[in-house]
Image 1 (tube, rainbow, N blue to C red):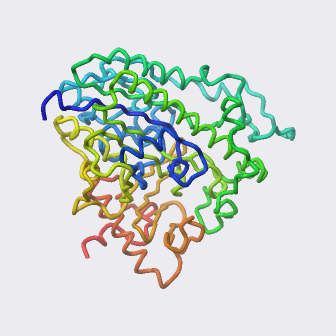
Image 2 (image 1 turned 135 degrees about the vertical axis):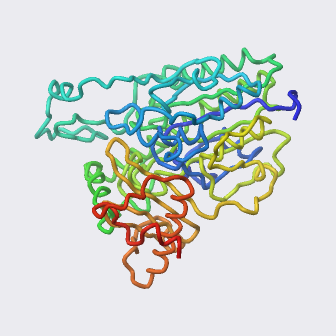
Image 3 (image 1 turned 45 degrees about the vertical axis):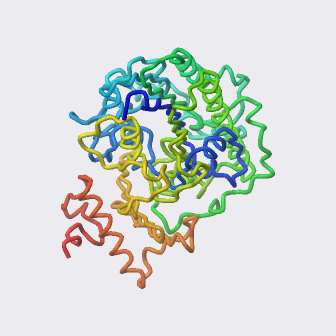
Length: 484
């Protein structure tokens, strides 16, 4: 591939955007995403290896599972397993830089508390969310806060948490669109695109916004964009979670303060937030067009993980393995290189596939180690013969240390919870994951098969869950099953 044929690369990454909200038949309006989808390829079943910012973003950058790159949970937290990538782990940005790309970074980092983008090949650090290496004394912080015990004057959209401080889940802000922090992030990226207008060297620009991460507090225009009365409750909202791990019920107890009308209002605000992210994405597309950069730019839009948005009565993401919290949007446009513009790919895709995809498109050298696979065949309208038939994820906890593993195929989804009951869902009959069928005797062969697949994946990707000590080796079928 000649230097002149190498594409520029534009990456726009949101935070906590549910894939379902961006699909064509969804009432949430995302016209700029629709435009890119019409000229590119939409990947409809894309998952991070963990529904949490830091491990998901590290996997996006490295093409590796958390067990391989070493970022297991929030790096900017007192309970972090690690505060950065393992020694020797490469990122796709380094490979792009080595191959002659100029790289520019604007927005959220959240991959390491020990390094900055400039340490990983990004030539200019435009704007990065600050990550402090010192958390300070949290004990003292709470010593100085009012307990709020016994408080009953809950505001609309507010969650009361005695001893922790209340949290406003959704609402409006007097700030206008141009005063939002994400607008600043996007404009810094746009400014850099303008500087690159006449560049003859290939470039990669990353723009990472903070939205639509909770709390869903947006300008009035977006807060009132969708009528809550027109929004149905999620089809699994009334799931009492009685047949699922107890930690799910404990999380739901916090959100059960909300009335059903407030749940609808929260979803309306979330949709408005997603539309605002789409408007910000539109600012970038407009800049590319104005600068004449569209024809030779590979555009990637994606998110790091999903958002429950009331599904199963939950919000945010993390420990639970439900589809709404994991599945993310992913669209790729590359003029002249998409065989079937407007097509959708329903195969299982992971964020770890992005690194090899970009490196192949750029004609750059591959990562020395990578657990993902390039999506380039799909852009050509082809399906690789050996493409994955299952999805495997690794949860090692968020700020609360907790272990689970998920493996799913088109028919079943299995979740191994060493500290609680396992989960098994028939996705054909129960797509909203309402009924846990793990204890049905007639499905014992299915459970055994899913356990086998899980251990096979765990072995292949150097997982950390092989401790045989009797108090923690609680799986119904242990890893030796793969030898049978």
